[in-house]
Image 1 (cartoon, rainbow, N blue to C red):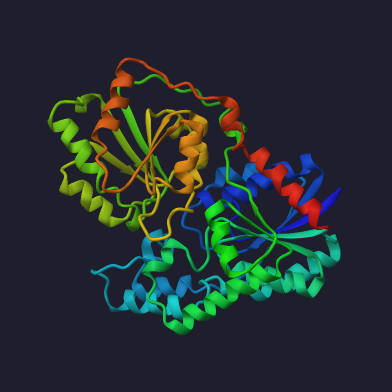
Image 2 (tube, rainbow, N blue to C red; image 1 turned 90 degrees about the horizontal axis):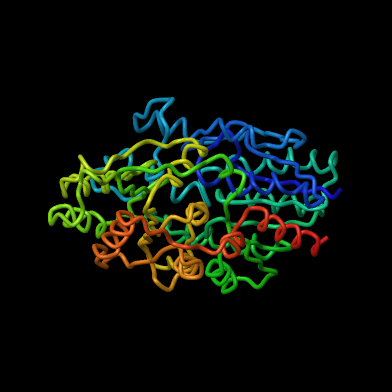
Length: 430
């Protein structure tokens, strides 16, 4: 059986979407005659913890952990965050109410920690990784980011050991939507771009989750590019049964950042209630995950705080139950320039539920294409009026009309299918 050394920062008990891609690859690789070996961080700083994911790690999978020097403890002390408190995902967003310490911290993060605040892990990736390569003799190194600093460590390790290397990207690098809020100097931006190009040029193959991301990379460096989208794991849904409800359930799963503010959703919902097109007693709206303060303020501005419930992060198993037991799922693509290639990981688990998806984002983007191809929902631009679409789905719920979805189309986005594509890439480069 061939071996692959997988380098990832996000690994159980880390929660959130970042851990799912690699964890599911590991789950199905052995079925395809590849033995996964994992190198991850020993003391990672995660925005969410999900202990339930630990049981998904195959019992025979070797997991190596190495320490990293990270600035998050100092950051918490500096800005006055409690030691055991999680740093919110929106900490790098521009905030007019931020004080001197927060602004100074953002500047340091943007211009000193390049490409990101996990650069203190790079040397140990090489140090510990070299020992693992000597002992395990993997056929391929596979590194998945963000954080993109991880790719710099993987590159050094591949050069040092001579092992074939695949760089996997869940998000863009210098073109990432979060980059728009960073106050980077020209020197910092230039250095970050040079790091990105080195990684793209050095890898024996580069994988990304969507076509538009590959197109972005291709304009910078020519290489052996492949698309492997994220997906859903059928076993996550095996024991979940959709329950009937006397309420029309609208739900959003996962974080909502500042640039995902669904400003057209709230007035549409408010007007449908005020005009009695939707009976508020038959309505349930829930957001599960970290929600930016701007969105919370928008909810309050429209007097919807008694209608929309915002809840904290829930374990992945509970998240699956939530989205299955819904009638309309919300999907928010960040409202930023160059957002056509953004495909949030949740879209595939949304698809598997076969519940209708209301998307906000570019109508000619990669996520919109997925919705169109599967017939599972519709993408709207952020200024569009959403009232008719919401009301139509509410009426369908009242009339118990179910949408028919082709299983074959949905199954193309399974984690097993994605792993088979990864195996094909690995087999080609060794």
